Length: 119
Image (cartoon, rainbow, N blue to C red; front, side):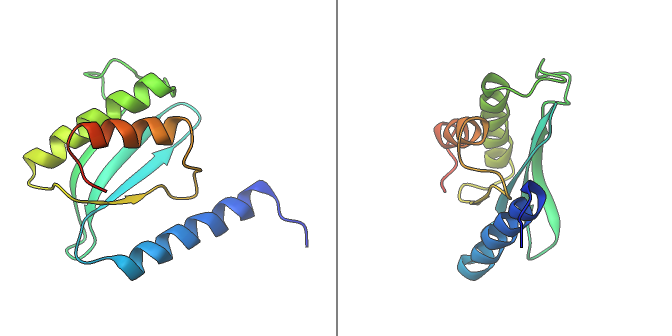
């Protein structure tokens, strides 16, 4: 059975999500999505089914509309940390989805940690 990129991505995403479900102690989840042109992140409370904070390069205030590079990811990471802290969230679980923890995802995570989020 040949695995193409999409099936490998889905298997990675399910593996990460199932692990987060096992270790979840009522902490919100920091969910990351990266497309070809943008990157977005949300802090989600799975117990209540609510999004507590979100940030994306689609926001014109950030000045990175249509850009998907490490600088934009770092800016989104610092903004989500600020918004999550204002929503009363300090500890989260990092849900990278099926994306590898490298490059843009790592830059976003490092900026969020520097902003004060713990994961």
